[in-house]
Image (cartoon, rainbow over all chains, first blue to last red; front, side):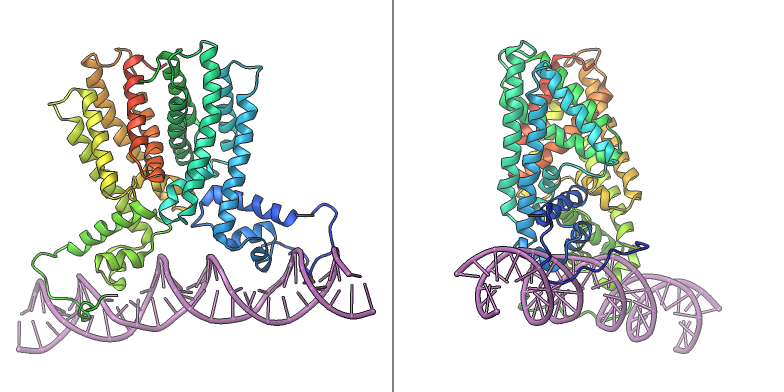
Length: 215
Length: 215
DNA sequence: GGCGATATTGGACCGATCGTCTCTTAAATT
DNA sequence: AATTTAAGAGACGATCGGTCCAATATCGCC
């Protein structure tokens, strides 16, 4: 409970704030990501998101047609956010290709620690919930994984050119293997509240990639 | 809606059925596993479980103190059930050690297909839900993974003795790597409704294990 | 063969959920 | 200035969640 609750808002269309143009939408997305990466879609209540974003319920349905539409927007948002994060590492010419992957892993570890291992990967979380989710989410989630896989595959191809992994390596399949396992590692990191599963997985993966081309 | 609903039960202690001694408990556990492996703990409603088990709501709290206690029982039950399944494969002397692992993978694929990829791994599902679960579940889930890891490690040690993997292999760590990645593979199999992620993960894992000892 | 102890259950309870609804006010438009 | 539109506020209803207790039957025992 706040000692001093925020002053009750006036009703009606608010005076136009300089900064907050489409700011309400932004606050909704941000708060939605926070809550959904912690709890998943089904458990996350709209009320909690709205409280956290300081957006009244009536406004929500002005911006999104339903919780489902909001969820779809969050998936896209998270996918784009994460893809940018991947590119930042994978396109970093200052490091050798495999070192870029390790840099991403280190970054992810720091991210998980920062939030006390409470926030996971939204795509993985929703993927596991898929049984109880709107069917339209499925294609979106699969596509997001596909996008990440393509980005990683490019990085692995660079590693192949650089001779860090065998020339016969199928980079697409290797990338698929990485993301599959990575989601499992994120899961266990959250469960054990430790980055060890993440680093261990990365270590094994890198050793495995360097050793031989997958069948 | 049933055309003919089952006759309304009388209240009070029912006449002792020959078969159902602690049978109600058994039905509860069975139905609970079905629902929880599909939906997870938070989303699964008691009502649905009770309907499916044909146990009246009032009875539930006679058998379990709370939904939490019931969940804990389900974790234990699932852990034991799965451990038995592992042993059946890992102790199968008719196959070479790594072939036993592959047999487990094939079995798991068949299991997922049989239920149209709706049922996942209870431990993985709850692990990802851990943020919104009773804190007491955490230790139980971790311990279950530890148990599976030990069983797999024994199988891998046998593979090492048999010369299927390098003599310097750290079987415990390799087993940890397997289960971490496996949970991710189960997730993606459910998402994509396909056994491909499972088989692909197994293929990469086996190739990786055979190629070199992990660092 | 009756009586207290015990097992089982029907249904009430209360709180939380999502989505809708109406009302209110400011900005935009003409 | 008048009208239309954008945006926000919060109450509401229907539903469903887990929990609990009074009611009722059987069992064990004397």
